[in-house]
Length: 294
Image (cartoon, rainbow, N blue to C red; front, side, top):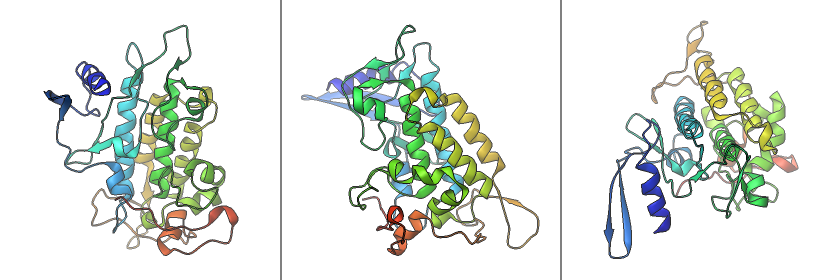
């Protein structure tokens, strides 16, 4: 009840294209029911980890840009707002696959000007929560930036932020794959095999670079959200992939039915290895079963 009341108070004062609209609420016995606008395409989580055809790269980047814009809006308010529970399941999608942030029950006003953080009871979702918050309860605006970095890694790999069914050392996606983000070879290895050919090698390298910046262990070293938005928008603009039928470059299509599937000859990424259920010889890169949404 307390979280729901907090959400009503919060959403009732804000409006942004990338925040879900609260239409109303009612009380039923001791329950407080919130009524939101209908998001017909579900959540990013539903699409990213679903069975069947992999979710196209152009939609992945479109969605995460919208979500990042929502966070940038919250962080740019006169009194910054820390979202605190940024994750794939809280990124809802309208009919055009435009992202809306939902579930503001854990949102927290940021620190006053003379402070760098707020101290609060540890809440949120394991795998997405920033390490400084999990260790100390100190919540920074840039704790949200860390969570965005985790989602960036999810859209690159097609793997969940945290999965206890993966082998030891691989449960945390960030801890497992952070070293691979440091090299071109490593980045090729971790990219979701199902979207091979839908992005350029430059895009993969730039994604790795901004993801690494977002998941820096020291929050001071993470970029501000506005900067992240700018980088992601540029990545979307520069995505030019080879076209089998032409020597000229072709911009990746936004249509699901006509993505370019030029094969770069990359080794199977972590997600692809999971789909085939074939383990890799390297101890840190053992393939596990493809993770699907329930």
